[in-house]
Amino acid sequence: MSRRNVLIAVSAIVAVIVLALGGVYFARSSDAPVDTGCQTAKDLIKYSDDKMADIARAIKANDEGVVDDRYEHQDTTTMYREWADKISNYADKISDSETKARASTVADKADALAKVFEKYSAPVPDAQLPQAAIEKSKATTTAWNQYKAAENELRANCHIASDDSKL
Image 1 (spheres, rainbow, N blue to C red):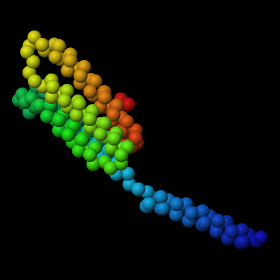
Image 2 (image 1 turned 90 degrees about the vertical axis):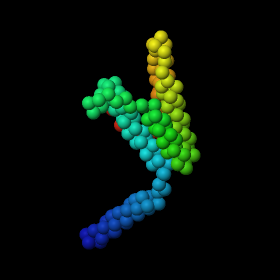
Image 3 (image 1 turned 30 degrees about the vertical axis):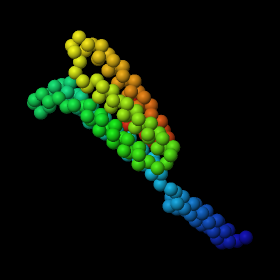
Image 4 (image 1 turned 90 degrees about the horizontal axis):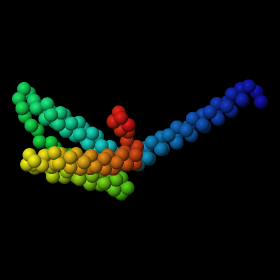
């Protein structure tokens, strides 16, 4: 075989490989179904992260007792309820049954956490404050840990990275 024939044969083989790989790439990227369940789950997680940051800022402002140079206590109980309701709305939008089940668990745990804050938002007689504070702390920690466990399962199922620098 002459050098020219070898070059033509090698070029033809390379062209076939490039065309085959390019065809596979384009076929996979255009025909791949969009996983709307996980996209909605990502939206749910982003909303939750953003709302928790808002709530944390409100709690910090309440602890400091000053907002815009005057005392203004912001009721975080309603913020938790709005957060839980919106998470439930996101979960309801998911069509994939496995992802929907995980998102519904997240919504249930968010609802449980909001209920803890609702339960302990009522005024307590001074004599009962220490015990009520301990109970609220335990109930909040338990509900929060259950929420985060459910959220982490949803994150793992949909391969959603965490923004939490502690993880």
